[in-house]
Length: 351
Image (tube, rainbow, N blue to C red; front, side, top):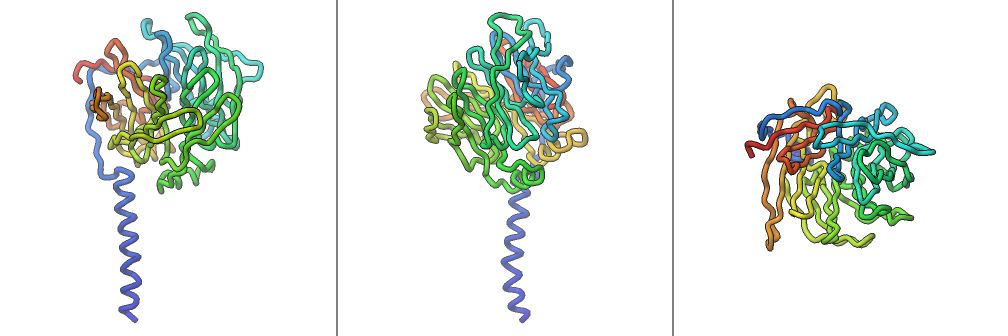
């Protein structure tokens, strides 16, 4: 009888040991973050409600601010414009007969004069809000054109415009409830997805992706790049509307959030979280926890299917927690945004 109990208990102990070890490495509990600052850094204090995503347009940085991932009804959501030359940031007036309900913006994208913004809501599903930018600077007012909503928008994070009325967007979560979202993340269920809006209808084009976050598009090559947060990769697809074919992936060794892609230089700027466990706690309780931030510059090696990596920034969370977006300006400034404290600007003098 004792021998039978031993043979029964042994495989159970083995499975439990595997799960503990797998979770230990999956959540990066074994990792430590070392500080690397490229130069003097300071905050843009006119963006005190955060800058969870930004996009450059005609010398102006458009930012989504005021995001609340845990309670959209508490959001102070707004869109800001920051003139890089004058270092002046101001809130945009949203002009609409029917303004977005509980506007809680996260990922944004600009194509032509269309600005698209993810709106994370407390309702049954999220939405994409489409705005029209003014013709000339200064961009003080933007007109709300329409809301795109669909039950397939279960957990939106980012959007990329492929025309003025078409886009791809990422769903990081399948479940809507807070408890199931946490379970989905901690167990890496791979229930994330990518949707495509053709101007009339939403299509589900990619499924079974591990927590997709950032998404960008190469309009020349027709390549779609999707950041897989928990798999620590950038997935690369040939993309033609609803037809997507995976062609490659970039292994990062850190969890990517949002991406900026410079098509002219084939360069990515990636805001990432090297310790996923600390981001999990920070996202749910940002006032009680800090999360390390890492910024990578990834350049394509010409005529080779290889990439070169440069770490531009690394911090344990004391200077900036949970960075979500980053970009190197032509003036050799590194801009890093996050959900709660705005944009950190660093001189790139020691890279």
